[in-house]
Image (tube, rainbow over all chains, first blue to last red; front, side):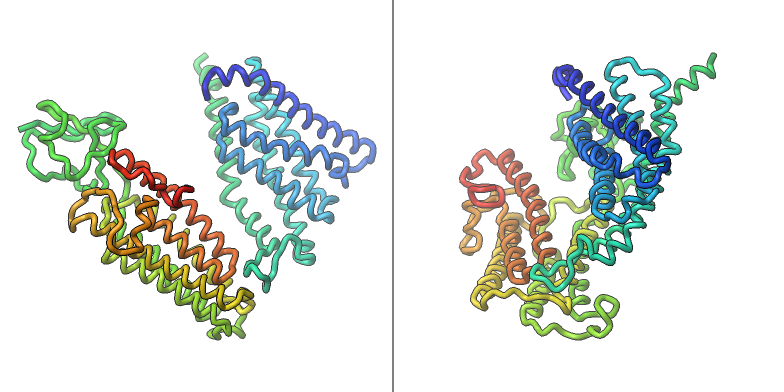
Length: 225
Length: 296
C-alpha cells in the first residue's frame, strides 16, 4: 500500500478501531448489566442481540482492511473468521429461535467479546504507537482459552440447532422442482461442524506461531541479561 | 567453446561447473529435465529447450540459474485422467448404480427422452475430448506440476457427479418447453461441438508435427473457423455455446453453475492468450476480441 495513502488513512483507521472497540465494550457492559439485573446467565443473548448483529456484520469491513493493506493480517484467515462469525450470528442463532436461550450462545458471545476488546485495543494502541506490553501479551495469550471456548460454544450451538432444522426443513430445497436442484441445510450444518476439525487447529497453531514470533524475542533478551 | 556454471536461483550455491559443454547434458539425476528451470537471471523467465548456447547473450563463462519446478506430470496424462472421470461417473448415475438413489430405483432407466439425450451428449463430449487429447492437440509444454492433477480432477469429477446426480434422478423434472425449443437447444449444442472440433483442427494445422512454432490463426475453408475474424480463442466461444445448449436442454441449476464457472475460467485464459498474441505479433488483427465478439 503506498505510504501516502497509509498516512492519510491512519487517522481514520484509528477512529474506526476506537469505535469498534467501544462497540464491543457496549456488548460487554450490556452483558454484565443484564446478568446483574437477572441474577442468572440464562437468556442473556436477548440483551445484546441487536448490537451483536450490527457489530459482527460490520466486521465484514475487516476483510476489506486486510485486502487494502491497512492491517497486516492475512485476507484469507480474517475472511474466514469473519464469515464464520457472521454465519453463526445470522444463519444459526438468529434463524433458529429455539437455540437463542442456550448457554452455548453465551459461551461464544463472551469469547468473541473478550477477544475483540483485546484485539481492537491492540490495533488502536499500535496505530497510536503507544502499545502497552500488557495488551500485546493479552492478545497473544488469552487466545489459549478463548479460542477453544468460542469453538465449543459455536459447535454446541450448531449441534443444538440440528433437530429444529431437520424438523422444519429450514433453508432447504427438496426435489422435485423446476431447477432440478436440492439443498439440505441439516446436512450442510453437519459438514460445517466437521470442517472445524481441519480448520480450527490451523488457526490455533497459527496464533501459537505468531505468539513465538511476537513475544518470543522479548524472552530472549531477558535470558541474555 | 564456452565454460558453463550453474547456480541455484535461491541460494546462489554453485551446483556445477562444466568446462566442456556437449550438446545434451543432465547434471543431476534427481532433477529430470522436465523439472529443470534454467534462466539467465534468477528472477527471469526460463530458457526454452530449443535455445542454443552459442546464441545466448553470455560471455566466455556462461552463468545460469537453476530452479526446481517440483514433481511434474505430462499434460496428456492429466487430460486423459480428468476427462475419463466424468465419462464414467456420469454413466454410473445414468444407469442408476446402487447406493446412489433409493434401492427401488437401482438399474432402472428414466422415462424422459431428454435424460437419454443428455447422457449421449455428455458422453460424446468427453469421448471427443479424450480422442482430441490423443490425436489432435499439440502441446507446447510437455508437463505441468503434479498437484494440478488433483485440483483438475476434483473440479471435473466433482461437477460431473453433481450434474449427473440431478439429471438422472428419479424425481428429475424435464423442461416444459416445446419440442421445437428443445430441438434448438440440441442443435446449438451439436453446432458448437462441431465448431470447437474445427477450431482444434485448425490450431493443430498451424503447427507442423514435432515443432513448437507459433502463428496467428486465420479462417480456413471450413465455415466454422470464420469466427476467427472476430475472436482470438473461438474454441472457448464454442465450448461456452455447447454448455449453454446443454444447460437449456436439461434445465438443471448445477449445469448452469458448471457453465458459469467454466466461462469465467475460459475468459481468463482467452484474455491471457489474446494479450500474448498482441505482444508477439505486431500485425495482429485489431477486430478480434478474446472470447465474445465485440463484448469480452
